[in-house]
Length: 310
Length: 173
Image 1: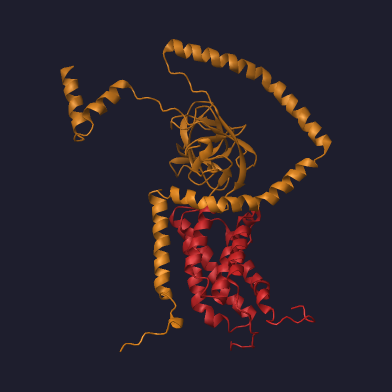
Image 2: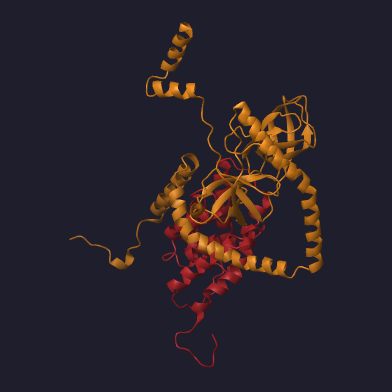
């Protein structure tokens, strides 16, 4: 005869066992998310539940800010209007000439046989809110998979680069700002064409790393995208150098910059179309097709043979 | 200090939908734009700890894990970061539940403070391992506000259980 405990004493698995199970599950999720980035589908699924709730939570704040706009004084609007007209007139001359220059540039490039520069085009989106995570700098914008946004698209505002789309959900997407820690943008200095990469510091500033202590960088230098990454189109303003420390005991200078665009502001931003991939030269692609799938030292030998023949 | 056990009222059994509703409201409060301000407590953590102290049979590590995942997705943080922290806090709360309820409310709050701090510290540790930077001491103010809120929160959340079974027209509660 074996005595089973009556069912009202049954309390499921022991707490420690349950805890180990859930802790192991969370840790494995953490590792998979950090190392392999393969949980996007789970994220998208869960977002179908959380995003409506988030939208609802942000609705009162939106209503307040809209009401504030509605009641803003007429004089302020008139001032703003006058300022904008002035700015437009200011910019009009350069804009008119830019258009002519762009056409001319295109013609010259065609004459030279260089590929034309891609025109910047994109979709205007609204920043909904900034993510709550205190460890990163991200914002959520109101366009997602539905509008064919893909991860990696650059995001700009009227002054310069704001960030890059890093996660896409069905109706919204997450943009990592350039000031996020270790977010990198390849740049060049307008004054002398010096190329480098600018990194976010996480506190609203950017740093130009690995520049030799005697590098030709000055306060007030403008950094624009160099376009070498194949993601950002070249020529968009990114940051301005504000502070340089040249310490002879270090081999690199510490160069701090501030973003040009209103990175921490809310408003409308533009998600640029993904940049078209530049095709490799035909010689390179032909070689990889011929040698594809063979041992890795083959291409080298083939090249050597080729050289000998010549 | 010797625990001074003052007899507490005999409460009505809690209604399950009230627990679910309160947890959803906590999630909603966490999604409000105010949650970016320093010192705003993590409402979900607070409510999870409260219910796992009061009703450890009804709110357990499973619900903590699911709410944690929801927070991770909404927060744009790493997957499993909130889940791990909440599961740990709920485990601590449910194993301390028998002990905590013997104390008066002020001392209960003192027990809850380390649990709420664990939630922040675990998340901080996880992100530190992933290469994030220290977000400032303001990140650790939230648990202390939660500690202060423990007393009013207990009264508010137990209010539906204070009603007598047979309603008396002359008594409002």
